[in-house]
Image 1 (cartoon, rainbow, N blue to C red):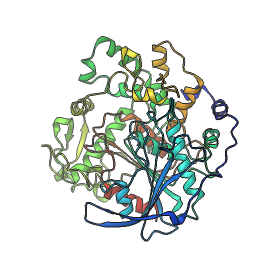
Image 2 (cartoon, helix red, strand yellow):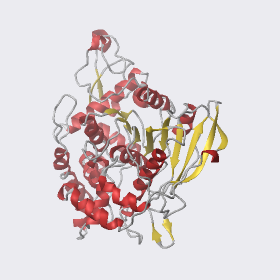
Image 3 (tube, rainbow, N blue to C red):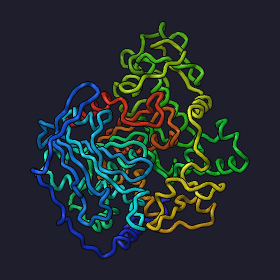
Image 4 (cartoon, rainbow, N blue to C red):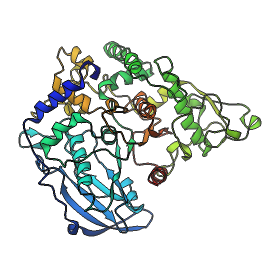
Length: 510
């Protein structure tokens, strides 16, 4: 865990890895006359005309010319004060080429809304030049930071406002968006960035949109087993699997309590009340969906008021007439007025037999609900993330992510390393630290994005609910604007409910 080594030690390792390079950003360039006219047709039939600036290399010391550049798309009518929507297509911690805007996702929608769109490439765990694996951690976030600095460096020459950058990504891309938002200007990255020849600018951003971010990798296995170890699926595993699951689960409470997280009412979150808090958030999501017309089945573990319609008027978005709030409905996170708890817009809502529209959800049996989640998609293995060598499991993508330039995969958690009788090197510890936005939320040495939009599906099992909830809570405890939701009936996915997302963006950029 990062608490066992100081920031000074991290910086020393980073400096030694960076070497003695005094690389400057002199090789960077942007030609305003190089843009080419283009257009995109949206599913609505709308055609958006824009100017495309492509292959903008954002480092002067280019290691991998396939990925270390970005494309920028400027819609007709954009000005110097137009916000910039930065979309990363990172998935699975793999390399991501600079792409074109897609008509059906947030990048195309951002162009239609009149925003400048930047799509940077970045190296990843599978990128390779010759015999050298170029994209192992923390290469991806370094490339994305370099892209942000490039946008700020050429802010006067390029249309769009580099002080209003809004990042967006899903899954591992959601993690990258979280890192861009949380780690702004932190000195631990500086030696590594300098060696790449980045622009000497700030790399903080205005807002971050994070769909199902796969983050807190050094504690994700603990959280996963803490939540899911008692499900039927885990209990049906072998005796060895159940033993590892239990050993990981018992490690999570100490980590959770070390975070010193508080509910909006000031209540300290502990292992004793954290599951109840997650339950509150799930109930709030389901209630929003019910108010918007969804049928919520009692088979999922929900309980409903028997006389809701007689006791009070139907709630609107989970609220109560006259500003009242029923017992159990959480306050705090700005959950907005998003219909169906974030499940509207781009995907039909699953309808299941249950209580009446407007009826109030009073409780949720969490074991029943968690077994429902597991029934929609099998759980990951044990462990889920740092699996290499544990119970003879193969290396995961995350084991590759923290490997080295020779192509090795490594353990990156204390538990799995101890299981395999290996020691985590200082370099691995540094990389794990630099890839975890939890370490930077509220960190006084980092410039956090002031605005956050975080979504994790209410039946997403790619990481466990405690992970995004803890991240959103830590940001909220730091006084930041956090719009968080366990979006109802959503699996692992992103760029949904775009009407809601872009309404939020319009409000924050006013």
